Image (cartoon, rainbow, N blue to C red; front, side, top):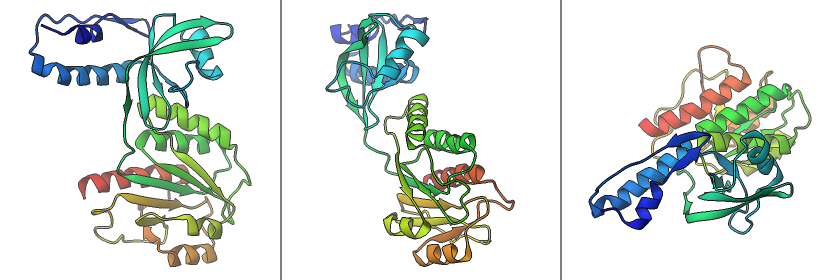
Length: 278
């Protein structure tokens, strides 16, 4: 028969007003751990995620997340949510108190920790003039999987500053939506020359309009990548020279000329694909 602990996993769950009932009569005890793991994965994939960078020490949701609980989803006391801290930790929590002062919770069960992805990808690119297109790059690349973003203000970059806090919020939202538990970090550099000494990846790739061929086997056995996508007007000759001298390989992303946001998506996905099948 099922242990009392496992039976608790199959109690009534209410997720976004969708009622899910589980009824299992018997199961071999040797399968319980495997079944609990599968069920945890199911719960984590379907349960609403909330970001709390310090949920291990502080049982009150941040203001923005509390507002979402109270006024958007209207989650009640006793209902369960998923918490992530953006540093690998996640846990199921039960809402214990809701009032005008905020939302408090109680952690249930153990806290899970997932190591960072062995495939490390840093996306370096020149910030776009359009805020919407810039945010779209962040959102989609987080969903696909990146470790960090390097915003490099090149000679032909069409803006001179970005709202870092806004971009971090976009990344956190994409992390929650895609079921990830690590939020990528952001760095900013005022020029290409400032950026280059801070690149320590095993493989350095330059999305290059002038490159027709890519070295064979460039992804084989490698786990650390940095891909650099230039501005709409491309790099200046001096910038290109310095980038190539610092060890970047030119890669062709397409036979056509891609917009910066398209090139970023293609480059990140290409690394994932090449690493998986290399």
